[in-house]
Image (cartoon, rainbow, N blue to C red; front, side, top):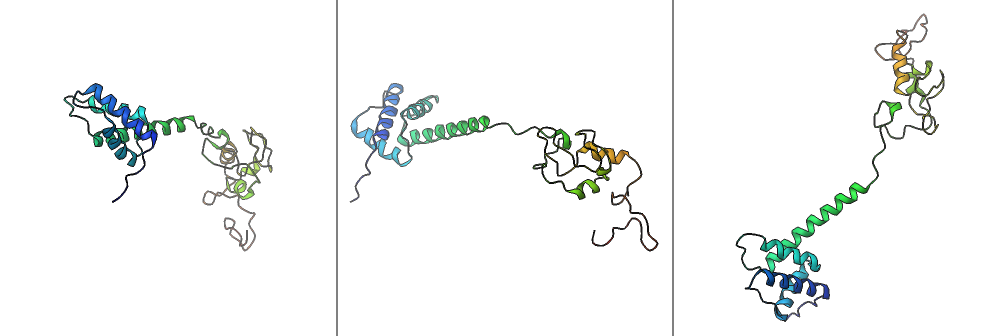
Length: 198
């Protein structure tokens, strides 16, 4: 013979509160010690130990038109639904309390480029329509200098979009195919072909 599980005080209180609330709604329900312990044993399996939620679960059951007498299964189902909705609300509140994401970087055209500050990637400056040869209208970096974050003064890994646009607007001094400035042609070399190893 198995021994019944030891009931916690919280579950017994929740079962008593739910039955008392059901007794208010329904004359067919009577509260006694045996019924409280029986309901508490079932409720403990699902950790239904909050008296306030248990009362709300009983109210929810009896808010239906022509509701039948509440059974412990009805109470547990309503309790779990209320607890799930409450957890979702708390999760939503926790998400709403998080700090807002940083605003898009206007220097990078509002693109969500993370970690743009740091050691300049010079090939990015050369490849982006040879932006390195032009002054930056946004951060006022001079030609042959890296762009600078206007907020914290750190160097940028890649050029500002306005500097790239300045390279595009500068005209025809770049290759339309590979977007690079052509090297001066030698006698045996195609001017638009990138030399090996560079």
